Length: 233
Image (tube, rainbow, N blue to C red):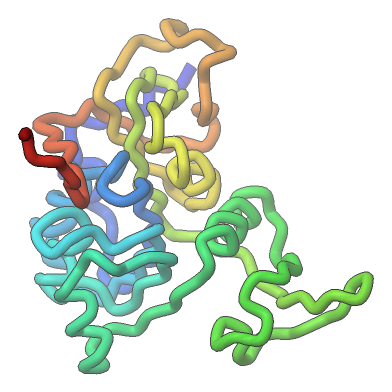
């Protein structure tokens, strides 16, 4: 069995070049590849196209890459917590493709499944439909959406093994599994790295066949994107 372990995030992302298309897993700030994002910051590469459900916040996640002007284009479904993203969008510094969240998820899944296009009713009659093929099925209008694939898919899992098998925890399972299948090279950082055979076969969410590199991450902050509390009376 192939051992896919690399030393750390720096080694895992070392061959990512300027102009690459990246998928970065996570939902909000949950399940984002924190170690790899910091390693990409250190690389100093630019003109990246980043496909991610959201753009992090100003001082964390992809927001840090936006601050360093490493991102040329964002493909996302939600960007409401990032003031720097808004500034770059309104000033024309950043190209943005906003999608309904389900459409984004399905485009990524289609990329991993080898399906080049599909039809969905989401977005018909809105700006989302501009420039896209429209067809009628059973009396309802649908947009044609194309798959999304990436040069590198960078995901974060709870547990993994040396063969690249992955288990996600909670909300981190939203976008990470489908992205893992849609990258030419998939890099996985995990909280706990185990020998091959230690994970129960029925518990595995991403089979190791999709993963080319894996390492055990360190120092996860696991921030909460927006905290709402009540005062004690």
